[in-house]
Every structure is written in C-alpha cells, then in structure tokens.
Image 1: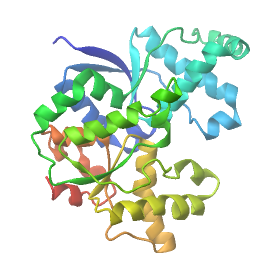
Image 2: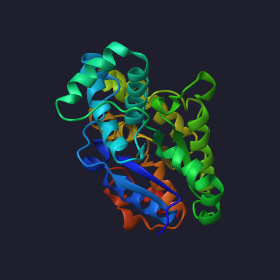
Image 3: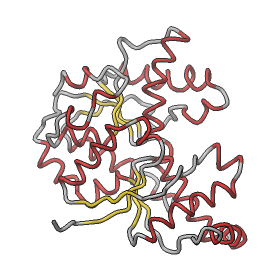
Image 4: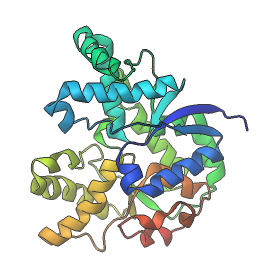
Length: 295
C-alpha cells in the first residue's frame, strides 16, 4: 500500500519492556491511517533526560547521537511515543548543532563504531504525527462518539512542552487536547494540568514524589470526576499507575478504587473502534474496568 508518511520508530525502554499495549495500539492506529513506522534496529535507551544527562552529559549526548544516526541512515525522520525520549533527542540534536567542541568529541567516539552524529534528522512526538499527518478531523470522523461517556483528566507531561521557541511551547499540549476531544472523550478540568507528576523526583526522594506531587494531582483529578488519566509519556504512565499502588501500600492514600491510566495512542485506538482486547488494554495494572464500563 502507499503510505502518507514513513517514520523510523523509536520506542524507547519502557514501552517494549513494560507497556506492550501502547506499542500494539500504536502499530494498529498507524496502520489504520496509512502511516508507516519502521523499527530502529539496534537502538538503545535514549538515554534519560534528567538523571543521566546530569550525571554524565557526554555519554548521554553520544548515546542520543547514535540513536539519531540510526534513523538518519534509514533515510527517515524519527518518531517516539515518549516525552522523555523526545526531550533527550531534541536537546541532544540542538547541542550537537551549537556546541562544536562537544560535537567533535561525539564524532570521535562514534567513529569507533562506524557512525557519525546526525546532520539533519527530523524529530517528532506521536502527538504531532496524529495531529498533523493523520489530522484531528480524521480522528473525529472515525470515532463517532464511542467515548462520549468517558471523562478523562489530561496530563501532558513536562517534556511535551519542549519546542524550538517560547511561543511554540504550548503547541503539542494543545494538539494533545484537540486529539482527546476528537475521540469524543470529555476532558475534565482539574486546575493543575501542567504540574509535574513527580516521576523524576522518585530517584532522589520517593516520598516527596509520591505524597507531595503525584497525590496532589490524583486528588484534583478524582475530585473533578475523571474516569481515567490520559498521558503522552510511558514514564508518566508508570508514575501514575504504579505510584497509586505505592501510595496505598506505604501511606494508606487511595482515591476510591484508583484511577486507570492510558496513553493517548490507546485512547485513539479505542475511539476509532479498535477493541481493547486487540491491543491488550487489560495488561495495565490499574482498574481498567472503569474505562471498559464506559465504552
């Protein structure tokens, strides 16, 4: 078949290892809309844009450059389903463009394995591919209000705001909201949408991350009447999903029976009529039945 667009697919670490339903939903949605995604053979961790970047910046930059070089050798722009991966690759690409000294050191390191830093790689978040290449109206046309009974709390995640300019920082989060609306699901306003979920803080202070950050967001979402949380990042997914289990186990903090958490691409899959069992929605650890009861 002829594809409207072709991308090199960078899955990152969390999706293949712990969130198979996100990968399955993405493959099905992209195929449904004629967008080709080709796996990047040999890709590694992005790596992490917070801890790794600060502990060993040159190693972080070299690994990111290697990943981008794989996509560039495929002759395709890169797309990822992860905010953190997008942040790392975006920041690494900009650093390689502006810091000649670091670029030279990365070139030397990569030359040992027959690679070189990317020269003109395009980077995309899956939100952009859905909103730009597929189109919000196309999502709306196929969704037919299947999710009209589902109330969702949107969590864009910090790194989705990464952009080329200050003026563009809200473009991807706004696109995220428009895609959710196009599925027919109803967004609930809870007041602290841009507040961090706390995932990066778990490395240094887990109690603060869970009680002072995650619990505050969950409380607001629950009070607003959300049936579930919709994210654009696997790390945020883990924080919301497993963080709720830890809040209940360690601190006896719970919000009814909990809020299920799904990735945006899973919401789109449900909206356009892909069955939850087709992409494995039940592999999530949260109370997914709260979503299923509204379909």
